[in-house]
Image 1: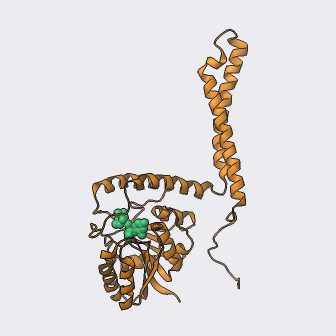
Image 2: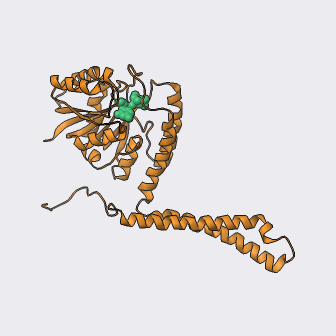
Length: 318
Ligand code: UDP
Ligand code: MG
């Protein structure tokens, strides 16, 4: 059975916030006529978050819960939530009361009526320490440039999706930072943003330190590479290999001709700078090719090599 709205809330040690959060969401949603579920995904909390969720459920049967045996990370929690969600519109939000449930009705409308695939929150006036806000600006600028998706706040926890989007993407590792990019590669292009209200953390502490920026950039490279070249690695490595190899070859040709015809008694070849440029370029060029061949062998054996998503069909009765 389909319902109107799923709210997915990944959480790790957020017990102090949960009652207030669920009361607030319920208050907002009970003013609408929407049918909904609130799906708490407890990512291996070691405080009393799970007991709290159990007690909340006793008073509200729109509440659902899943708990991990240990802490797997926000991406894993979202991924499970996505696979279990029944709502036509799926909204994710953080558990720490930094995101406001008051945004839900408008986000719902933007998906359902305006027809966007994804609406990403934008914490324009962000209530976090400066150690977070400044690096985040840089990170978002780079991500916009690499991905071509014009969002100011790619990693906002508050986002809304069409159900099809969440059923057709997989979030793993720490890739939750790039869900719009993953969705874009899956073919969902209609992405926009909405300025959302943001509050300072009331209880508990942030779960992400500064290492997020290093990991974040590495993930951006992987995601872009896999999305663009995952099924044709030779196109990337072969091109790089050819370019570097040609550079090496040109240098080699130059010192060879020079030595044989013009400069017979000059410096030894092995004493010339050009020689080392030629040598390293040729070796690196060949290595790029090898990486390309290995990549092709891996992708040829991958069970996903012919995986694509069908959007619609006409006159098929299966
Ligand atoms: N979270 C999670 N698993 C983790 C880390 C975080 O489910 O391993 C949840 C966390 O409980 C919160 C949300 O992800 O609901 C965002 O985390 P946090 O507020 O610490 O991030 P920040 O707002 O500081 O970026
Ligand atoms: Mg937070």
